[in-house]
Image (cartoon, rainbow, N blue to C red; front, side, top):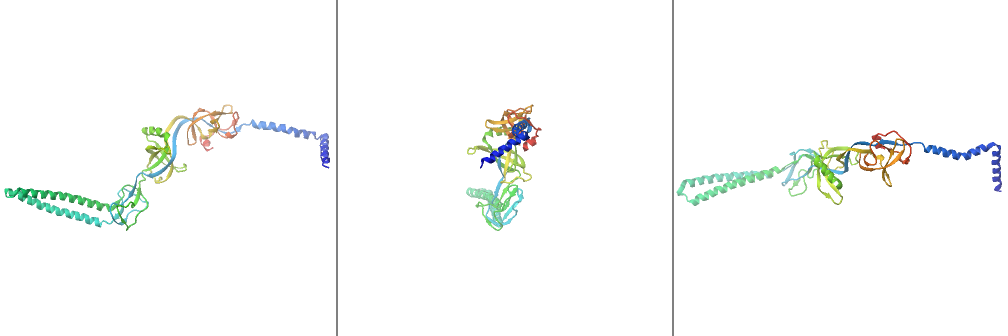
Length: 385
C-alpha cells in the first residue's frame, strides 16, 4: 500500500521532464554552483575597518594610584587648665584663622592667683627697701657696728632680692594660666564637630579635646606607587618638582593639580609599594580631609616616542601584535613590543614605525592578507572605539 504513492510520484516527475520541465530541474541542480560563486565573490570584497596612523610625539609617563586626602596639619584643641566653659565661640564646620577665639574658660580663679602673686611681690619689695636702709645704716656706723651685723644684713638684702625674682616668676606663671583660659586656634583651618558643650567642666588631663582643626590650605594627599618606580621618581624629583593630578575616585573628573613633596623613607615590604605625599593649594576647597581620590604622578616625558591608539594593540597566543595595512590595502600581522600606556595611547618600542597604518576597529573580521577598506580614523575616534 505504501509503495504505490511513491511510484506514482516518480512517474509524474518523469512526465514533467519529458513535457519540457527539464530546464527547471537542471536549474535546481545548478543552483549550488552559482551560490558558491556568489560566496567567493563576497569573500573577495574589502573588509570595512577603521585605520589610524602610527605617530611620533612626546609621551607623558604617568603612574596612577589611589590616595587619601588629609589635612596638611591636624590639631586636637584641648584645654591646658581646669575649669568651667563659659563660652563656645565657634560654629561647627567654620573656617577659622590662627588666633581666633574658640572657647572661654572661667578666668576668675586664675585672675585671683595672679593678683595674689602681684601682692606678694609688692610685699617683698617693701621688705627689700627696709633691708637696704638697715644695710646703709650699718655701713655708716663703721666701727660701731660689728662685721657680723653688717654681713647678716647684706645677706638679708640678697635673700629679698632673690625673693623678688621668684615673685616675678610666680606672676608670669599666674599670667600664663590666666591666658590659657582663653582657648585660641593654633592654626588656620576648618573646625570639626564640637566635643564639649558650654557649661561643662574640662580638665587638662583628659584626652578628649574641645574640637579638631584641619588645615586645608594647603592640603596633602597620601598615595602609593610600585617600588620598581622608586629610582625613577627620586631621580626626577632631584631635578625638578613632579606634577601630581588629583581625580575623582572613578578617574573621570580632574579635581586639582599639585606637586610631589615627600617620598617616604622606607618601602612597605608587605605590599611592595612606597608611600608618597603630594601638596595641593586647594584654594577652592575641592579636596577635603578623608576623601578617596585617584592620583596621576607625571614621572617623565618621552621625547619623540612612537605612539598608537590602544585599540590597535591585540593579544594573541604568541604575544602582542597589530594589523598593519600596506599600500595594496592588505592586512599583515606585526608582532610588537609595547611600553607605557596613558589616555588611550600606547608607546610602541618595536614592530611599528611612524607613518605605518594600523587597524583600530574591525579586527575580528580580518585575517592576514585580507583586503580592507576604511578612512583613516582620528585619534579621538580611535580612542572612543
